[in-house]
Image 1 (cartoon, rainbow, N blue to C red):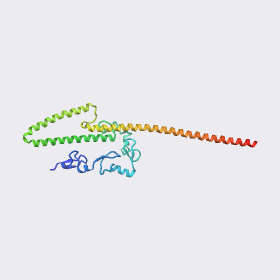
Image 2 (image 1 turned 30 degrees about the horizontal axis):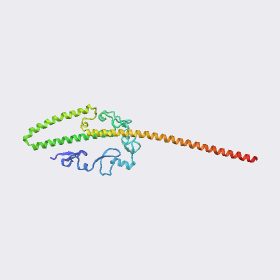
Image 3 (image 1 turned 45 degrees about the vertical axis):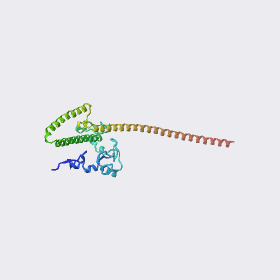
Image 4 (image 1 turned 30 degrees about the vertical axis):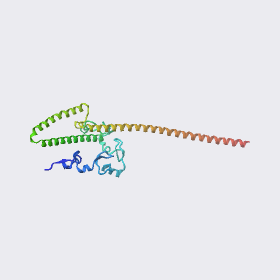
Length: 277
């Protein structure tokens, strides 16, 4: 009986030799990489290099044209009006609240606390990023575990039957030594006040990536706020300049009318004096 393994992307069963050694991807998933849509930011399998949007957004572009940024989450996916599809279909949750990660007004308060992400109120993008980091951590741990088991099996086969007892003792002691290391690592993470799960805590590069994304989002939000303030100042200055120009033109027209009236009066007086003489 042939043992089948699951592809980590499409989750279909394949023989072990049909999957890649690193990420355990099938041939189709290796040829079609998984990328993010430039509009809705959801992941999809890229069929060609020129294809940068998912099929759903491609259909919406044909129907409604190029989308605009959403007024809540700033994702360029508002095909109809000023709200993306996520906010259009979420009136049942009430007005959006501030996301605890990116600080934007794009998270919805759920009555069920189980739907929160690790106890936090996160928006859709931050939730997807957290789930991706968590999935990546589980895949790395699974890959490390399978590699470790394969190494122990190969070592047992080469060592022969005579060294089976010593090999078993060595494996048991190594496992016992490994458990306190993982436990202390988890304890150090929890003492630092990190609210993420233990699986995520074991993958520091993933956490760093998630934190960097959050910091970049905060910087972008700050820059947008500063840009809005500067635009408001420029608008006020232009408004004041326009008012001054209008007032100057009005005064100039009044002066011209007054001068014309004075010239007309002077001409009439001159004509009357000449007629008397």
